[in-house]
Every structure is written in C-alpha cells, then in structure tokens.
Length: 116
Length: 117
Image (cartoon, rainbow over all chains, first blue to last red; front, side, top):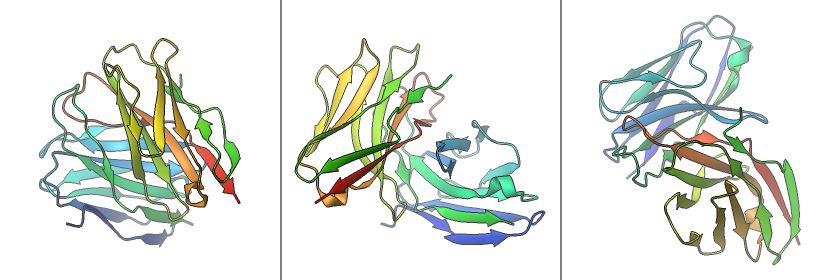
C-alpha cells in the first residue's frame, strides 16, 4: 500500500516550458487535490476533483490545468511555466463522502519545482 | 479575510515541557472540522489530530491534545512533554460544510516549533 505517490520529486524548468506533475493513490479514494506551498503562505488549493470525472478550481488556479484520468490518478499541468510558479506542490486524497463526516486528507511527498 | 489564523510564526520550548500552538478560525457554518498537521524538515505532511465542531470533548491523540473553544473560535494544539523530534512546522486547517463531496482543507500559515535539549 503506497498511499499517495507523486512524480517527479524535483524539477527545474525554464520560463515558458511546460510539464505535468503526476499523482496517484491506491486507497480507492473518491476525492483528490492539488495544493501549492510557498514560504510563509501555508498550503493553498489549486484544483480539486471531488469524484472521478469532475474537477473544480480552488483558490489559486491561474496558470494550471488538471486531469482526473481515472479514480487513481490526478495530474497537474503547467502549460507555460513562470517564475511565480516556483513552489512545492502537494497532491492529496480523501474518501470524500457526506459533509459532516470525518475525512482525513492523505498527502503525497511533494514535488519541489523551480522555474528559472 | 483569513479563515485560519496562526499568530505565532515561531515557538521555542525545552525538552519535556508542554507547549501550546495557537489557532483561531473564522466560519459561519455550524458544522466544520479542524485539523492539525506536522511538517518536519523532510517535507511530508503528517496528520496529528482532528476535532469536529459537534464534538463535546476535546480531541486527544497520545501527547497531542486540541483545546477547542467553540465560542472563541479557537483550536489550539497542546503538545505535552516535548521531544526533540517535535521540532517542525505545524499547520492548523479547517474543512467547512457543506461541501459537494470534496473535502478541501483551508490552511493557516503555520508555526515553526523548535525544541531544545
């Protein structure tokens, strides 16, 4: 049971390059999330997928796109990277379910992205 | 407006002492959940403790307890008998209801805890 996995762990891009961050979970969770973590800012939600086939914007979606490929996988794409997207990116998943229920979010190890 | 406020950028404590990390939150929902996560220097996010808004008793998990004061909208984390391994960044987070099945968390900016021997 690997939990939530992310690839790559580290990446350096030049401004304008594109890349896709991969995330997969093997816990049969319904909901998946992408966050970014910047110094002094905590984690901020980029996009989420409440269930397979749906995606929604979070607090900071500009410059990103996502794909919920299947129940296991949720990818984050930067079409034209900018220095402002230098950050640590975390993928997370949870069982989802009804409001009012306890749902711990399980986090991947993170991807450290630098855009030059 | 900030939904989660952690006013202590850094805290310092000696081994075996107790420490309280502050967290206040803002929501108009009656039903919500509060979480604390630990992030050591290695970077992973480790879940510590959860408190539901309707829970009557404060949550406890080993050396961690959550001092929940609903009327004041505070959810402070208390770590008893600090250990060197407790040195890390600590995040308070909230999940508001209702949600459309997604359970995204809103995070505070974090508190860095340093434990010395």
